[in-house]
Length: 156
Image (cartoon, rainbow, N blue to C red; front, side, top):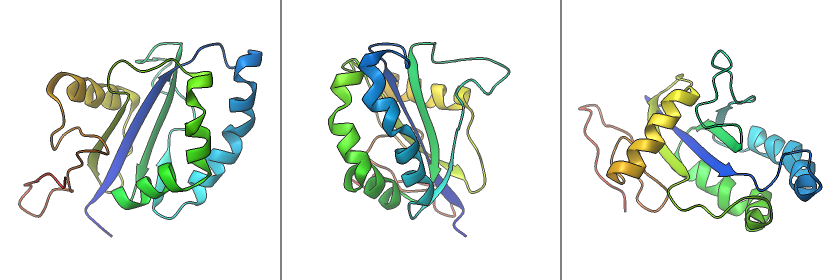
């Protein structure tokens, strides 16, 4: 088993509460898309309920939070951009506000580690404040997992 796995967080400001008619098409696809992720090659884990940390919601009540762990960047990229998930993503403007700052962050975690929402919020804040680097990056400027010396270099 590899020493590191890829954690990912994405957040989205909903245009309406989940039970609002505006969100109905999105809500109708959640189970299907989650099942697709669960069965995707390279999928490891996902947070199933936001706010699991003693009722804390570090992202606020109006944000949809997706936090997961994948074996590698290729597996996550395939799921996000080359599966039925891409179709749902293409409609995101119907359900979510346009993002004005980074809303996706990726980072490497030791194999078996399950990041908390607080940890993920810190990574997203780091990306927003410092830009991409080995501790927090996005799809466009990804970093490989640390090697045995702990060093990393950008992949793109």
